[in-house]
Length: 175
Image (cartoon, rainbow, N blue to C red; front, side):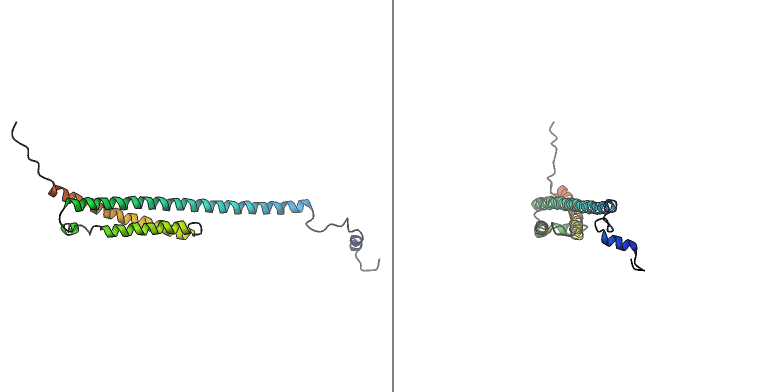
């Protein structure tokens, strides 16, 4: 062997089958395999959690939409009852202490808007981001809150009209 040459290199080049490269040991591959498996499991858990949260959010949106639709239909029925109770053209003028009551075109517009939300959900729910779904849920909740105030006004208007429009019952003195 010439001077300056490393004996281990010479042996390593002569006996290739005995020589081992780095990361060929099972002991070395086992932690890498475990880390890769752990990463895959963490990614699957995160994805499942995200999908579960999205499904929960969609459920909340659909529940709010159903409740809003019921409330709009109830509001329309009560508005019909009020207009049937009186022959006056506008109930809101008689009730100066209250804000204007909802009108039939306003309720129809609310129902159309609700249908638009449902159609958007049907078309985009699978690809919608969490922020879009949260915004839709918050918009429906805010609409329900405003409608609740209108329903209270309708109930007050009905209560104000009921005593004035009821016939007075007179008891007969014949006993």
